[in-house]
Length: 406
Image (cartoon, rainbow, N blue to C red; front, side, top):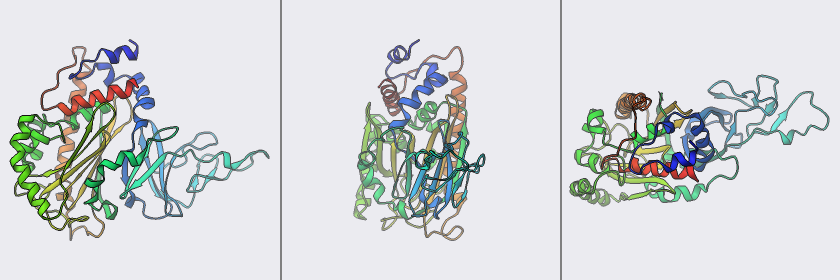
Protein backbone atom coordinates (compact mmCIF):
# COMPACT_ATOMS: atom_id res chain seq x y z
CA UNK A 1 0.00 0.00 0.00
CA UNK A 2 1.25 3.52 -0.83
CA UNK A 3 2.47 5.45 2.21
CA UNK A 4 -0.13 8.22 1.81
CA UNK A 5 -2.90 5.63 1.79
CA UNK A 6 -1.43 3.90 4.83
CA UNK A 7 -1.26 7.21 6.72
CA UNK A 8 -4.84 8.12 5.81
CA UNK A 9 -6.25 4.82 7.12
CA UNK A 10 -4.85 5.29 10.66
CA UNK A 11 -7.60 5.82 13.26
CA UNK A 12 -7.31 8.82 15.60
CA UNK A 13 -6.87 7.70 19.20
CA UNK A 14 -5.50 4.29 18.20
CA UNK A 15 -2.03 2.78 17.93
CA UNK A 16 -0.52 2.39 14.46
CA UNK A 17 -0.71 -0.40 11.93
CA UNK A 18 2.05 -2.99 12.19
CA UNK A 19 4.05 -1.64 9.21
CA UNK A 20 4.90 1.55 11.11
CA UNK A 21 6.76 -0.49 13.73
CA UNK A 22 8.86 -2.73 11.47
CA UNK A 23 9.08 -1.43 7.90
CA UNK A 24 12.53 -0.48 6.59
CA UNK A 25 10.82 1.53 3.86
CA UNK A 26 8.92 3.65 6.38
CA UNK A 27 12.08 4.11 8.45
CA UNK A 28 13.82 5.52 5.38
CA UNK A 29 10.93 7.96 4.96
CA UNK A 30 11.33 8.98 8.60
CA UNK A 31 15.03 9.70 8.01
CA UNK A 32 13.99 12.18 5.32
CA UNK A 33 10.81 13.64 6.81
CA UNK A 34 10.82 13.33 10.61
CA UNK A 35 14.25 13.27 12.24
CA UNK A 36 15.76 16.31 10.42
CA UNK A 37 12.96 18.55 11.76
CA UNK A 38 14.30 18.49 15.30
CA UNK A 39 17.24 19.57 17.43
CA UNK A 40 18.12 16.47 19.42
CA UNK A 41 19.80 16.84 22.83
CA UNK A 42 22.97 14.81 22.70
CA UNK A 43 25.21 15.17 25.73
CA UNK A 44 26.83 17.65 28.08
CA UNK A 45 29.81 19.81 27.11
CA UNK A 46 31.71 18.68 30.22
CA UNK A 47 32.28 15.35 28.45
CA UNK A 48 34.87 17.02 26.21
CA UNK A 49 36.53 19.73 28.33
CA UNK A 50 39.87 19.96 26.47
CA UNK A 51 40.92 20.77 22.91
CA UNK A 52 40.99 17.54 20.91
CA UNK A 53 38.58 15.68 23.19
CA UNK A 54 35.98 13.89 21.07
CA UNK A 55 33.29 11.23 21.18
CA UNK A 56 31.27 9.44 18.51
CA UNK A 57 27.50 9.47 18.21
CA UNK A 58 25.51 6.78 16.38
CA UNK A 59 22.02 7.69 15.21
CA UNK A 60 19.79 6.57 12.29
CA UNK A 61 22.71 4.72 10.71
CA UNK A 62 25.10 7.69 10.87
CA UNK A 63 28.31 8.10 12.86
CA UNK A 64 29.05 11.66 13.98
CA UNK A 65 32.26 13.04 15.51
CA UNK A 66 31.69 15.61 18.28
CA UNK A 67 35.00 17.33 19.06
CA UNK A 68 36.24 20.37 20.93
CA UNK A 69 38.42 22.57 18.73
CA UNK A 70 41.61 24.39 19.64
CA UNK A 71 39.58 27.60 19.91
CA UNK A 72 37.34 26.00 22.55
CA UNK A 73 34.32 25.68 20.25
CA UNK A 74 32.58 22.32 19.82
CA UNK A 75 32.16 20.95 16.30
CA UNK A 76 30.20 18.03 14.82
CA UNK A 77 31.34 16.24 11.64
CA UNK A 78 29.96 13.21 9.86
CA UNK A 79 32.48 10.42 10.39
CA UNK A 80 33.08 9.88 6.68
CA UNK A 81 36.45 10.53 5.01
CA UNK A 82 36.10 12.65 1.86
CA UNK A 83 38.56 10.40 0.01
CA UNK A 84 36.88 7.01 -0.25
CA UNK A 85 34.40 7.12 2.59
CA UNK A 86 36.19 5.29 5.40
CA UNK A 87 35.38 6.12 8.97
CA UNK A 88 37.90 8.66 10.23
CA UNK A 89 37.55 7.96 13.97
CA UNK A 90 37.35 4.34 15.05
CA UNK A 91 37.59 4.57 18.83
CA UNK A 92 34.40 5.66 20.57
CA UNK A 93 36.12 8.56 22.36
CA UNK A 94 39.55 10.00 22.99
CA UNK A 95 41.82 12.98 22.47
CA UNK A 96 43.55 13.84 19.19
CA UNK A 97 45.48 16.79 17.81
CA UNK A 98 44.05 16.14 14.34
CA UNK A 99 41.50 13.78 12.79
CA UNK A 100 43.39 11.29 10.61
CA UNK A 101 41.73 8.64 8.48
CA UNK A 102 43.30 5.22 9.22
CA UNK A 103 42.90 4.09 5.57
CA UNK A 104 44.98 6.54 3.49
CA UNK A 105 45.93 9.10 6.15
CA UNK A 106 43.91 12.02 4.88
CA UNK A 107 44.16 14.41 7.81
CA UNK A 108 41.67 17.01 9.02
CA UNK A 109 41.91 19.84 11.53
CA UNK A 110 39.57 19.66 14.50
CA UNK A 111 37.24 22.13 12.75
CA UNK A 112 36.92 19.67 9.83
CA UNK A 113 39.17 21.38 7.27
CA UNK A 114 41.35 19.03 5.19
CA UNK A 115 45.00 19.78 5.95
CA UNK A 116 46.85 16.85 4.35
CA UNK A 117 46.15 14.50 1.43
CA UNK A 118 49.17 12.77 -0.11
CA UNK A 119 49.94 12.44 -3.81
CA UNK A 120 46.81 14.09 -5.18
CA UNK A 121 46.58 15.69 -8.65
CA UNK A 122 47.83 19.25 -9.19
CA UNK A 123 44.31 20.67 -9.56
CA UNK A 124 43.17 19.12 -6.27
CA UNK A 125 41.85 21.75 -3.84
CA UNK A 126 41.94 20.79 -0.17
CA UNK A 127 39.34 23.44 0.68
CA UNK A 128 36.76 21.46 -1.33
CA UNK A 129 37.17 18.28 0.72
CA UNK A 130 36.62 19.11 4.37
CA UNK A 131 34.58 16.79 6.57
CA UNK A 132 30.85 17.30 6.11
CA UNK A 133 29.47 19.23 9.08
CA UNK A 134 26.49 18.24 11.20
CA UNK A 135 24.45 21.11 12.63
CA UNK A 136 25.35 21.68 16.29
CA UNK A 137 24.37 24.14 19.03
CA UNK A 138 25.34 24.34 22.69
CA UNK A 139 22.94 25.83 25.25
CA UNK A 140 23.50 25.85 29.03
CA UNK A 141 26.17 23.20 28.56
CA UNK A 142 23.79 20.90 26.64
CA UNK A 143 24.93 19.80 23.17
CA UNK A 144 22.25 19.55 20.47
CA UNK A 145 22.57 18.24 16.92
CA UNK A 146 20.29 18.45 13.91
CA UNK A 147 20.45 15.99 11.00
CA UNK A 148 19.21 18.30 8.23
CA UNK A 149 21.24 18.21 5.03
CA UNK A 150 20.29 21.82 4.32
CA UNK A 151 19.33 24.64 6.64
CA UNK A 152 18.49 23.55 10.17
CA UNK A 153 15.30 24.58 12.00
CA UNK A 154 15.55 27.69 14.16
CA UNK A 155 17.20 26.58 17.40
CA UNK A 156 16.38 29.76 19.33
CA UNK A 157 12.70 29.46 18.43
CA UNK A 158 12.69 25.86 19.64
CA UNK A 159 14.31 26.56 23.00
CA UNK A 160 12.67 29.92 23.83
CA UNK A 161 9.52 28.57 25.61
CA UNK A 162 11.69 26.26 27.71
CA UNK A 163 14.18 28.81 29.02
CA UNK A 164 12.32 29.63 32.29
CA UNK A 165 12.31 25.93 33.17
CA UNK A 166 16.00 25.41 32.39
CA UNK A 167 17.23 28.65 33.94
CA UNK A 168 16.95 27.58 37.60
CA UNK A 169 19.13 24.50 37.27
CA UNK A 170 22.57 25.82 36.31
CA UNK A 171 23.25 23.17 33.70
CA UNK A 172 26.11 25.24 32.29
CA UNK A 173 27.88 24.62 35.63
CA UNK A 174 27.11 20.90 35.77
CA UNK A 175 29.14 17.78 35.10
CA UNK A 176 28.29 14.21 34.15
CA UNK A 177 28.18 11.86 37.14
CA UNK A 178 27.11 8.69 35.32
CA UNK A 179 25.65 7.41 32.04
CA UNK A 180 23.99 4.19 30.92
CA UNK A 181 22.82 2.98 27.51
CA UNK A 182 19.91 0.52 27.31
CA UNK A 183 19.80 -1.14 23.85
CA UNK A 184 16.17 -1.91 23.00
CA UNK A 185 14.94 -4.30 20.29
CA UNK A 186 11.97 -2.19 19.24
CA UNK A 187 10.96 0.60 16.92
CA UNK A 188 11.58 4.10 18.30
CA UNK A 189 7.85 4.88 18.26
CA UNK A 190 7.14 2.03 20.68
CA UNK A 191 9.89 3.44 22.92
CA UNK A 192 8.35 6.92 22.86
CA UNK A 193 4.78 5.62 23.14
CA UNK A 194 5.80 4.06 26.43
CA UNK A 195 7.58 7.15 27.74
CA UNK A 196 4.75 9.58 27.09
CA UNK A 197 2.14 7.76 29.16
CA UNK A 198 1.94 6.73 32.79
CA UNK A 199 -0.97 4.31 32.35
CA UNK A 200 1.64 1.59 32.80
CA UNK A 201 3.39 3.15 35.83
CA UNK A 202 1.44 1.42 38.60
CA UNK A 203 1.61 -2.13 37.17
CA UNK A 204 5.11 -1.87 35.65
CA UNK A 205 7.07 0.55 37.87
CA UNK A 206 6.42 -0.15 41.57
CA UNK A 207 9.63 1.63 42.63
CA UNK A 208 8.96 4.74 40.55
CA UNK A 209 5.36 4.77 41.79
CA UNK A 210 6.53 4.75 45.42
CA UNK A 211 8.88 7.69 44.82
CA UNK A 212 6.16 9.92 43.34
CA UNK A 213 2.76 11.09 44.52
CA UNK A 214 0.02 8.75 43.29
CA UNK A 215 -2.24 11.72 42.50
CA UNK A 216 0.57 13.36 40.52
CA UNK A 217 1.17 10.23 38.44
CA UNK A 218 -2.50 10.08 37.53
CA UNK A 219 -2.61 13.78 36.62
CA UNK A 220 0.83 14.52 35.16
CA UNK A 221 2.74 11.23 35.09
CA UNK A 222 3.83 11.85 31.50
CA UNK A 223 3.88 15.65 31.70
CA UNK A 224 1.31 18.34 30.91
CA UNK A 225 -1.98 17.13 29.39
CA UNK A 226 -1.19 13.46 30.00
CA UNK A 227 -3.92 12.79 32.57
CA UNK A 228 -7.65 13.22 32.78
CA UNK A 229 -9.42 16.39 33.89
CA UNK A 230 -10.69 14.60 37.00
CA UNK A 231 -7.19 13.46 37.97
CA UNK A 232 -5.87 16.99 37.55
CA UNK A 233 -8.58 18.31 39.88
CA UNK A 234 -7.73 15.66 42.47
CA UNK A 235 -4.07 16.69 42.37
CA UNK A 236 -4.78 20.43 42.48
CA UNK A 237 -4.61 20.85 46.31
CA UNK A 238 -1.19 19.18 46.48
CA UNK A 239 0.03 21.19 43.49
CA UNK A 240 -1.13 24.53 44.93
CA UNK A 241 0.37 23.78 48.32
CA UNK A 242 3.74 23.03 46.72
CA UNK A 243 3.60 26.04 44.38
CA UNK A 244 3.05 28.38 47.31
CA UNK A 245 6.06 27.00 49.20
CA UNK A 246 8.32 27.05 46.11
CA UNK A 247 7.31 30.59 45.21
CA UNK A 248 7.98 31.70 48.79
CA UNK A 249 11.59 30.64 48.18
CA UNK A 250 11.65 32.69 44.96
CA UNK A 251 11.62 29.59 42.75
CA UNK A 252 9.91 29.47 39.36
CA UNK A 253 6.77 27.34 38.91
CA UNK A 254 4.67 26.84 35.81
CA UNK A 255 3.90 24.65 32.82
CA UNK A 256 4.12 24.75 29.03
CA UNK A 257 2.53 22.38 26.53
CA UNK A 258 2.76 22.47 22.75
CA UNK A 259 1.74 18.98 21.79
CA UNK A 260 0.05 19.08 18.46
CA UNK A 261 0.60 18.63 14.76
CA UNK A 262 3.35 21.24 14.45
CA UNK A 263 5.27 20.64 17.68
CA UNK A 264 5.67 18.15 20.49
CA UNK A 265 7.08 19.98 23.50
CA UNK A 266 6.21 20.04 27.14
CA UNK A 267 7.59 21.48 30.37
CA UNK A 268 6.41 21.81 33.94
CA UNK A 269 7.49 22.05 37.57
CA UNK A 270 5.61 19.90 40.05
CA UNK A 271 6.18 18.35 43.48
CA UNK A 272 7.76 14.91 43.69
CA UNK A 273 5.76 13.78 46.73
CA UNK A 274 4.88 15.36 50.08
CA UNK A 275 7.91 15.05 52.32
CA UNK A 276 10.36 14.29 49.48
CA UNK A 277 13.15 16.73 48.66
CA UNK A 278 14.69 14.87 45.73
CA UNK A 279 13.79 12.09 43.29
CA UNK A 280 15.54 9.37 45.27
CA UNK A 281 14.53 6.10 46.92
CA UNK A 282 13.95 7.71 50.32
CA UNK A 283 13.25 11.26 49.14
CA UNK A 284 16.38 12.71 50.75
CA UNK A 285 18.89 14.81 48.77
CA UNK A 286 21.62 12.97 46.92
CA UNK A 287 23.91 15.89 46.07
CA UNK A 288 24.45 19.61 46.56
CA UNK A 289 22.01 22.23 45.28
CA UNK A 290 22.37 23.21 41.63
CA UNK A 291 21.91 26.51 39.88
CA UNK A 292 19.80 29.24 41.48
CA UNK A 293 18.02 27.13 44.09
CA UNK A 294 18.19 28.71 47.55
CA UNK A 295 16.93 25.61 49.33
CA UNK A 296 15.26 22.30 48.52
CA UNK A 297 11.67 22.91 47.44
CA UNK A 298 10.75 19.25 46.82
CA UNK A 299 9.98 19.94 43.17
CA UNK A 300 11.02 18.41 39.87
CA UNK A 301 11.32 20.17 36.53
CA UNK A 302 10.46 18.19 33.39
CA UNK A 303 11.45 19.55 29.97
CA UNK A 304 10.75 17.67 26.73
CA UNK A 305 12.58 19.47 23.93
CA UNK A 306 10.84 17.15 21.48
CA UNK A 307 10.03 13.44 21.55
CA UNK A 308 13.70 12.48 21.29
CA UNK A 309 15.02 14.10 24.46
CA UNK A 310 13.74 15.02 27.92
CA UNK A 311 15.37 16.57 30.99
CA UNK A 312 14.12 15.62 34.47
CA UNK A 313 15.67 17.88 37.11
CA UNK A 314 15.49 17.81 40.88
CA UNK A 315 17.06 20.61 42.93
CA UNK A 316 20.30 18.64 43.30
CA UNK A 317 20.70 16.59 40.11
CA UNK A 318 19.51 16.40 36.52
CA UNK A 319 18.78 13.49 34.21
CA UNK A 320 18.89 13.64 30.41
CA UNK A 321 16.87 10.86 28.76
CA UNK A 322 17.70 10.32 25.09
CA UNK A 323 15.67 8.13 22.73
CA UNK A 324 17.82 7.13 19.76
CA UNK A 325 16.47 5.52 16.56
CA UNK A 326 18.90 3.16 14.84
CA UNK A 327 16.71 1.15 12.47
CA UNK A 328 13.12 0.05 12.02
CA UNK A 329 13.49 -2.47 14.85
CA UNK A 330 16.36 -1.22 17.03
CA UNK A 331 16.67 1.78 19.34
CA UNK A 332 18.68 2.92 22.32
CA UNK A 333 17.56 4.60 25.51
CA UNK A 334 20.41 6.56 27.07
CA UNK A 335 20.30 8.12 30.53
CA UNK A 336 22.86 10.74 31.59
CA UNK A 337 22.94 11.90 35.23
CA UNK A 338 24.44 15.32 36.05
CA UNK A 339 25.36 17.09 39.27
CA UNK A 340 26.93 20.41 40.16
CA UNK A 341 30.46 20.63 38.72
CA UNK A 342 31.90 21.23 42.20
CA UNK A 343 30.25 18.19 43.75
CA UNK A 344 32.70 15.44 44.69
CA UNK A 345 31.78 11.78 44.35
CA UNK A 346 31.87 9.98 47.68
CA UNK A 347 31.66 13.23 49.62
CA UNK A 348 28.79 15.20 48.05
CA UNK A 349 26.99 12.44 46.15
CA UNK A 350 26.69 8.69 45.94
CA UNK A 351 26.34 7.30 42.39
CA UNK A 352 24.27 4.27 43.39
CA UNK A 353 21.71 6.45 45.16
CA UNK A 354 21.82 9.02 42.35
CA UNK A 355 20.95 6.61 39.54
CA UNK A 356 18.61 4.22 41.37
CA UNK A 357 15.21 5.57 40.28
CA UNK A 358 15.90 5.95 36.58
CA UNK A 359 18.15 2.92 36.26
CA UNK A 360 15.56 0.53 37.67
CA UNK A 361 12.76 2.28 35.75
CA UNK A 362 14.56 2.23 32.40
CA UNK A 363 15.47 -1.45 32.77
CA UNK A 364 11.78 -2.17 33.35
CA UNK A 365 10.88 0.00 30.35
CA UNK A 366 13.28 -1.96 28.16
CA UNK A 367 11.54 -5.20 29.12
CA UNK A 368 7.98 -3.98 28.60
CA UNK A 369 8.82 -2.25 25.31
CA UNK A 370 10.43 -5.41 23.95
CA UNK A 371 7.41 -7.47 25.07
CA UNK A 372 5.22 -4.92 23.31
CA UNK A 373 7.29 -5.22 20.14
CA UNK A 374 7.04 -9.03 20.19
CA UNK A 375 3.25 -8.80 20.36
CA UNK A 376 3.03 -6.12 17.69
CA UNK A 377 4.88 -8.46 15.30
CA UNK A 378 2.17 -11.12 15.63
CA UNK A 379 -0.09 -11.85 12.66
CA UNK A 380 -2.97 -11.26 15.09
CA UNK A 381 -1.94 -7.75 16.12
CA UNK A 382 -4.29 -4.92 15.27
CA UNK A 383 -4.25 -1.28 16.48
CA UNK A 384 -5.84 -0.75 19.88
CA UNK A 385 -7.47 2.30 21.50
CA UNK A 386 -5.59 4.58 23.87
CA UNK A 387 -7.00 5.06 27.37
CA UNK A 388 -7.92 8.41 28.92
CA UNK A 389 -4.54 8.35 30.70
CA UNK A 390 -2.67 8.01 27.39
CA UNK A 391 -3.68 11.35 25.88
CA UNK A 392 -0.07 12.39 25.30
CA UNK A 393 0.67 9.15 23.44
CA UNK A 394 -2.34 9.70 21.21
CA UNK A 395 -1.06 13.22 20.48
CA UNK A 396 2.38 11.78 19.78
CA UNK A 397 0.92 9.57 17.06
CA UNK A 398 -0.98 12.54 15.62
CA UNK A 399 2.24 14.55 15.61
CA UNK A 400 4.18 11.69 14.00
CA UNK A 401 1.71 11.13 11.17
CA UNK A 402 1.61 14.86 10.39
CA UNK A 403 5.44 14.90 10.18
CA UNK A 404 5.53 11.85 7.94
CA UNK A 405 2.80 13.20 5.63
CA UNK A 406 4.33 16.67 5.26
